[in-house]
Length: 174
Length: 275
Image 1 (cartoon, rainbow over the protein chains, first blue to last red):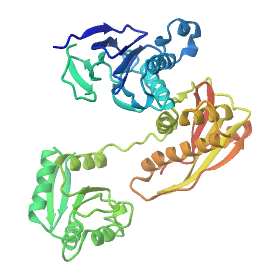
Image 2: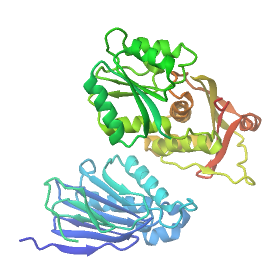
Image 3: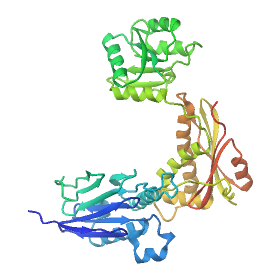
Image 4: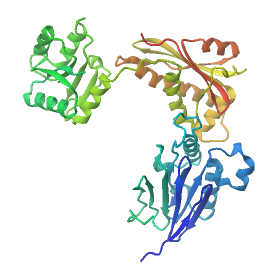
């Protein structure tokens, strides 16, 4: 019987897990963006919940909390995963969030910017996106089961299997 | 508004299937004429006004290709949309198929027919303006270089940069036209770094290369819309250096959109809107 431990990733945070049976989960992804990276060979993965696209708008805050920003958040998450022994070429990337919640007239476009900067960071780091569920005007919950690599999300009451993980694991709870 | 349609196929079963599909796809049809071959179809078209023709290619007596050729060379029939529905794989860009308004391969789904008909009957895009042009350019820029074009306010137009790269290309899409993209050198370098996913370029030519490529891809999207089914030809982009006077000249083209990309000025322009 699996005894999965749930760890909640707050806004502007990321968590990593290596070889443990954990569920990393983050709630209330609106215009924020969620990224899971998982190395199925090493069984190492992480989940980032970033709020804003670029750290250059607030270098001070990005030093204190790099995961607030997509560019510094991705760099920090990657550095941790690679430091733990994950292989860049093995990483499976899934994206969720980047909704346009408040600005129908694209006044701020934070969601779209977050998505674009994230894709740019992944491209720069040689990582293709395996699956994504972005845009629209809904809030999302995203999770990664680090024992299986299964990545899922929930939006408007519907559970979506974003990526089954290498073993095609059965659905977890959330 | 309901359409009067003509279905041309030598198989009565296929004609019935096409008619049923139009019904299933909820395409409003006021009257449906049928013909077994191109000759019969042309005879019907002489006596009846029809909104859309659905035609097979391989038919006895007269096939769909000959029918299309005759329709397009007959002034009264030349504007009637023809959707080719055929089991043959065709190159829709070669004559006379490029004269067809749409192409559906058999076996077809109701959705495929619906999509083609809806594409024909949807209100035609008439706003050939700077926003229309910028929207297409922005899609390319986001996909290739992960950057945004931010439209400037009327009262805060971007200042022409001292040194910029200008790409110019000629196209034929129904009629001949030209597209321009003018980018500050700093932005051209960043566009290339971003497209390649590197911090340093091997040489500055890569920046000019990316500007030309982005214009080329934009031209693909723009001419798709301008051509309305006519054959399209794109000529390679020509690159040059541009000063503020050159920028101002291009900013005065009939459709021109100045914008900021990562706080750097950029200008995209089109010679003439379609008639």
